[in-house]
Length: 353
Figure (cartoon, one colour):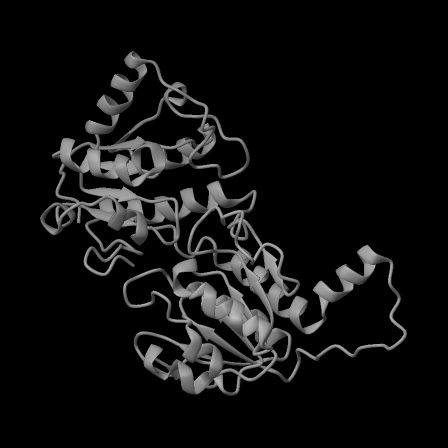
């Protein structure tokens, strides 16, 4: 991968703790890491990759920031953590070989950069996929349990100080069936936790092949057939032209009445009008949503106030350990880069996943 025979220069383009920068420097004596925290916005919370939106560089600092990035063959983070920054560095830096994105699903940002295929072939973009697998899987399990144990109704009764005269039973998770749309790292971690709860798990994968512990594996064309037996469905799929509004009226109609639905993938995978209809007609009993077609979720969205919906502001992947885990993933890839090996989690510049 790396055609450089001497010094490799890495620039830190996003907020990062100094000790983690030192860890990157320790990967190999041949690398130089450019890091100037004065040029980076302060974090407001752990793993705040964009930093304080009120941060402004002076004209002199702005010039220094871009001069630093344009010296590097490798960037840690998108410049200014946005698609426009990626587009600018791609056009200005002829040395650029690799950009590591903080997001697990960076394909959308790469697409939004508007870069043409010729430019995108000149360098690699890798994602932080896998770093978020455990927190997302735990959140998916929370959503399943919430739906089965009627947590929304319990919260409503508690707020109203209602002790129902008729006791309503909850559903057992153990022995039920989960369908995971997208058996990648997040999907497989979700499946592991679900099996520990006693669930039977089936799911989808681009390449259909047997997976240990998974009852049935299908591609997206076979998803409808899996849904008929599902008690709960978890989406982990990225947002691409192939997955846009995959969960539409036909998909929700294929589910059993009362199915629990969780989305920790991308909001564009779900037709939100069809989702609301499925919630209102009882096809879905509960939806736990961390992602939405438009973010922040518009104030007038009926999802905010729906009695059977949990709205999470795209935060379920966040953890205090995220920066460290991403830096460790980057260091592993950096070792491969320096050794001429293949990078993991490269964004497909054609399909953007």
